Amino acid sequence: MLLMALRIMARMNCDPEPLRAPHAAPENGESHPDSESLADELHRFWKPLPDKPEETPERIVRALWLTASGTPASVDSAADTRLPALNEAASARLRELLERKKSGVPLAHLTGRQRFLGIDFIAGPAALIPRKETEILGCAVLARLQGLARERGEPLVVDLCTGSGNLAIACAHYEPAARVYASDLSHEAVALARMNCEHTGVAGRVEVMQGDLFEPFEDERFLGRCDLLICNPPYIPAAKVGEMPPEISGFEPELAFNGGIYGIAILMKLIRNAPRFLRPGSWLGFEVGEGQGPQIARQIAKNRAYGNIETLCDARGEIRAILAQT
Image (cartoon, rainbow, N blue to C red; front, side, top):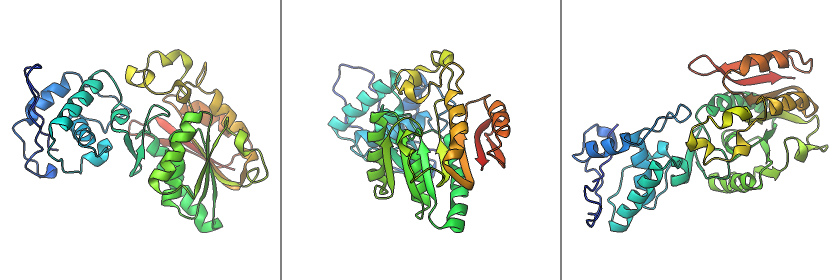
């Protein structure tokens, strides 16, 4: 992938020149003369994070460049977008964004965008940034949802701990027949999820409510009527929160990832209560943390409310999502 052209000024007190976009299309593999200096600058502060494999120095620059130009873009969409020339004001904005990235601010907080399952979402400090690893759960859920739509017509979907609304919105986006409801304990996350419903064009088909886990759904509309119940809960043990990269612990809401003493309290509550809401032959799907999968799968197997249990692994063989059918 072509590294984006950006002139890094050697003398901070001189007036910066307007920044020029590459003359060649991004995908043609040619190198612009300023690319190497930019790559060097990025590599001096950039540290790869395993939960954000899509972020590389080249892609970071593209996303920040477009954002500085007035067209916010996720790191994925920026990879396929031709870069415009930047005027003096946009050049200064880009330098400001680069400095903030150096300080550890998440890229998605700087661009205000993050892609999940092919959809660009609004991102911000109000909720956890959607991760590529959650697409493991997302893809499996969508496959089950499409099957349920064929069998039942208009499947009822409930997404708990919705955060930015990425899982709920993906369900509505890829399965128009689905009736989707979502909830989150955080008022700020609920506001962001509702904003994303508008942003992605599914506002009339996804209802987002505020409340703790099952609390908003304790009525006859949902009890024993849900076809699919999904959740990406907090699952990081409290003792490990301080060990997380500062880019996560310092900028993303702790409520979204702190899972209590052992990290499984919410997971166990989810498994215990979901059968009250699910129709026979329906599915519970949720994400688990690294190392938690085998233990959680054994706990589900002990619950007679569930029959078919499936575990989904990442590229390293770690169980990262579990599906259980009632």
